[in-house]
Image (cartoon, rainbow, N blue to C red; front, side, top):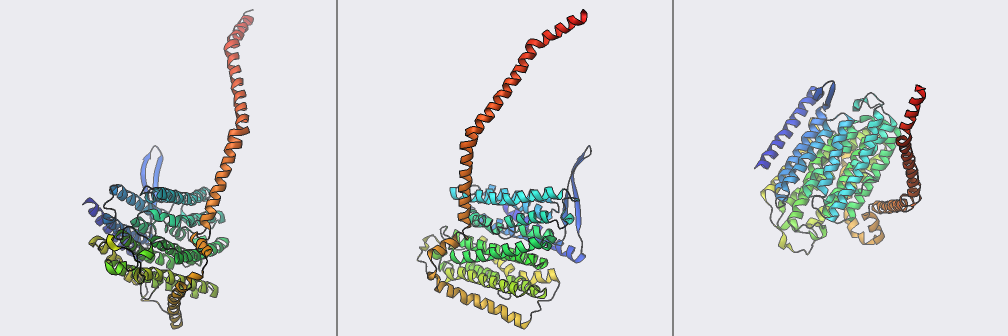
Length: 550
């Protein structure tokens, strides 16, 4: 009963934050709150909280999704004996994200940043098996690299006027460190390998992590430090890295068969898309897509969790064909709507943000190369979204449905609410954030976008028709995420070989003899000095006194 009351409280708090963000936006207000914890003998421990409509809106969406995830977890994790520990971890995870959102100070951002990394380690290793431990350690180490560069940025900003993001003066070194921190947290190339490994966590955690918390913290950090993209070298690096990430994740999503990992790769693709358009300077529309993507991506993961939960913990899409038509009709319909929203079908949530991105890029003169690249990414999105729907609806699996159960009110009720958000959130947020009555589309552009959706639809069926022509080496290369898993294994092997060389020839070899000899000589010298002190010091004092008396 306490859990349900707490979930209702979180939902009411999220509504409060959303309505307050509207008030702040219409009033054009920003609050800087200096929260003093204590002041004793001149020692002042305080924290600055930055409140504007962006932070309130994003925090409201995070609380909204978190309340539904916790309500969803009541049944999904109900049979687990550590359910209370799980709920406390989720709560601390949301509090860490809230600290990142409300902090204008890099030092306090680091506290929430580290909290996200450490608690994600606990959540990924929640099932307590070897694969979960290995995935959790990989997630932790990749995120610690971003923590290291964030600490270096804090040290470098010490020479400026302060650690607040308003004091960021386009310093190249600080911007480069912040860029690496954002790339590590959002799992961009070459730090992408931890994202599919994090799928070892429970599915409700995946819905929270991949929609509005851990992976979006890097994008939100970029949005706070607005002028990172204005540094030319960093801008070019973001172009190359994010475009490569989108291509890699889209290709992996077309070849793997794990349902959760396919959705995780789609998340990686959309994160790359947001950072790609951030590098073009489209900051408002990136935040718009961040909100809409959080809503329908959380629903996709919840739909996947229902399917996995009610089909005997099976995640292979080749064995799930026809499952939704039998016992999970609401779940299947919600998954189709979220997949179409992800593809940008008019007039769902993803359409408004993606179309707005393309329109603004053309208005700002992004160029034909960038426009065609964006359209190619849209085609890939349609292809892997259709792949999920095709396998779950049209394919015949031959799986035994003896373990398949029917839907319950708790899970289907969550999906119905999030389905409404996937249908109407794009239109509502467009009117609220940009105060416009609609999108002014050129007729040729509208026809062109619909053609891209149709090309993606046809392209997928050509893909599944000629997939047998791809060699086994190509499948292995793509499944290894362009060889990044193999490179990590080689790096680990080289690192352990180097450490074994150090232990054998240095720590246990000549260094031990050298250092041991130096320590031995030093101890003997100190011992001789002490021996001289005890044996001759008092005698010398006595002789001195005798000489003075004479």
